[in-house]
Amino acid sequence: MRIGVLDIGSNTGHLLVVDAHRGAAPTPAFSHKHRLRLAEHLDDAGAVSRAGVDALTDFVSEALVVAEDKGCAETVGFATSAVRDAVNAEEVLAHVADRTGVVVDVLPGEDEARLTFLAVRRWFGWSSGRLAVFDIGGGSLEVAAGGDEAPDVAWSMPLGAARLTREHLSHGVDEESVRALRRRVRSAVAEDAGKLLRAGAPDRAVATSKTFRSLARICGAAPSSEGEFVSRTLVAEDLREWIPKLAAMDDAEVAELPGVSASRSHQMLAGALVADAVLDIFDLAELEICPWALREGVILRRLDQIAGQDPEDSGDPLS
Image (cartoon, rainbow, N blue to C red; front, side, top):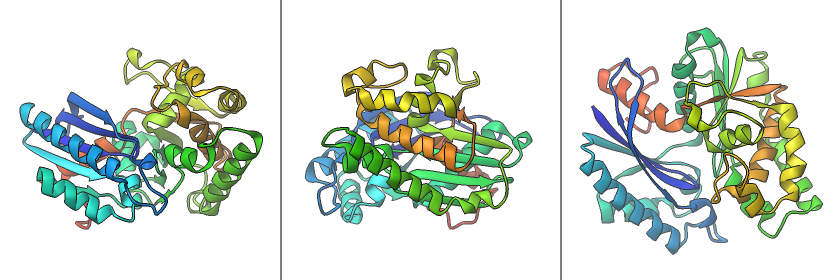
């Protein structure tokens, strides 16, 4: 069947149209994206601004037309950190539903981590043993680990690249602001690190999504043009060499680096500090980059539900 997955992230709105059936890898058929930057459209009270609500509504309307044009049998919509953490989240999504007819579910942070883990498990398979999975989004960092298809532990922290950039680096980058950001990140990551570390070192440590992919590319990983089956890693030593270089560059210079888009260049330093904390605190020499992430996890879960073989319980918010 053809499914449209509408992903309302902290940075980008993305409709991914896929041809999918259970037992096979979802095959992308079409992609429609728009830069929303919802994490940067939060006012001082923590509410999504009118400009942010209008941008989101317009995008969902456009995406619905695209999904219909491409022949999607159904469209599954979900929102992550920027909407989840907004004080007016219910009002925002009610407005979207009223104007477009599309119901967008808000994914709790733990479920976001679990669905991302599902995608990584299906990509690497059972031979990977115990997996640890990390995902840096615009608004949050997700962590999950386990030896089965569902993780043993999964949690989310408000350590997204866009959020941290807005809160710590919006007035410029200097030694004091970078140190304060580094201290906040490491304290937050270390607070719950024992959830994962108590079970011992994972057999495979994996990173997903755009921030980790961009950092790996900066550090020398293969470009996307070489295909998704090429092995890519983010090496801790390489990343640590790049952090002071990123701090010394302006946004335009960062945007010239391989794998970095102009719309995300201002977030790369914050993302690098989060990735560095993950590598250090979880004592990892490197992270493997997985091309599948949350969107694929949502697709896989939906296919499992249709087949009546969902590995999780029926409390999943996308059921």
